[in-house]
Length: 394
Image (cartoon, rainbow, N blue to C red; front, side, top):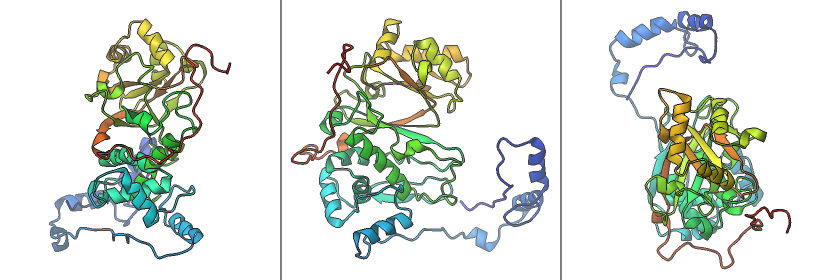
């Protein structure tokens, strides 16, 4: 749809009423025309011939292959073109991408989805091969590709263009967690696990390259968010949870592998505010703004067990308790979500104003022969498991 536009100065949020009146009575900063005159003209004047027959703007397609060069020169090219997150990458050579593509049976040129990080840019199309390219860059192995293809199929970018600074989270459920060695226990949100680290980073690279992230042009987050480097990527500790796994609560079967996506701003898990029962959780949440009234809690299994002892044998009971305590007209139980993650060394919880977006199936992207693994799967050292207070005694 071709629309006429008029622009006030910026910002318009959290400024004095007098300043806003000055914007309305002043000029459009992009063309110098008085703003209200421009508004009236735009609403009343007939369309021009050019406006009746708008030309759809399309960005030029990038070449599939780059000219050969040294490793250093190609790395600099990726960096200077903004195709990375600023950290070192694995160069996506044809051989490496072909190896990555063995992680799925789908045709490399199959379209996975279309996305944009902003509402005023065209949505860009991406294929299985393009997902594989970003997976190589992030340091992934073929066994990780099905998870990334599921994330890509959601068309949900990890880095939306907003003047506020969003962060994202992805939680994996089902058998694939152990098949690819994801961490859901001790230190699950720390940089101590290969799969968690590279999968989370790949989501960021896909957002940068599929969503066309360009600071100031398409990406306008005022401060940005350090969580976007890895996007709080981990799995849920289903085995230690007192409740049904999260994906089961969202309508999937326990033996199905899924990835659930979330978005918000704040993560609060400091000191005594991260320990306690349902009342402490509500009080902590009330100290946060809440993303439209949404909250997501990451609970250590010990914290979840304490809540069950207090009578919350179903997390929906806990969600309804939150709604009753907040007394907010727009908050609903389904907007309050609980995930069980952690190593049972402290009954802690993390409070987040994250909104749940969707859960996506991973199984359709897994090869018929099963997850493609290396002859000797690459793994970081496993954490010592301790469930009975024996941590630190090994």
